[in-house]
Length: 127
Image (cartoon, rainbow, N blue to C red; front, side, top):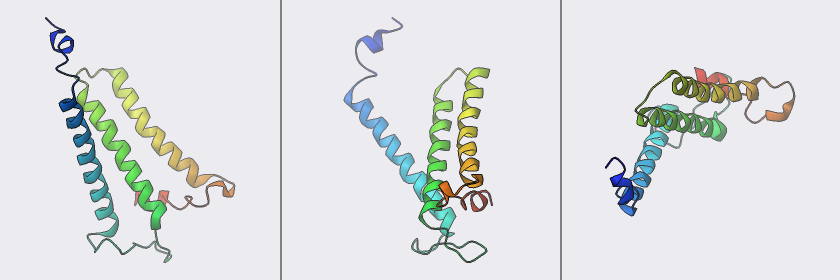
């Protein structure tokens, strides 16, 4: 009786799939809106914030901020949906978040101009 719902396809149908798709779209809209509101400070949405040296933060900063938000939300949802929290799952959750931070640090501190488009992102992202 434990697997009866799965055998009767109650958990794997079009209605459940559409629910998960709408759930993902809702989180995407919410994450995007919160990130862009955090960047613009509630402005009209067309003004680009500037760094202390007068340069615009621009497209790369906005994209990186939204990507960080998506990674955090996806990992938090995965962590929340699994009902068995043990040390291995918690360590994997932390490693996924730390991998994002490590990639941002590597891009910002790389000695050659390989990542010149994104080398200025980390400092305003953390402030």
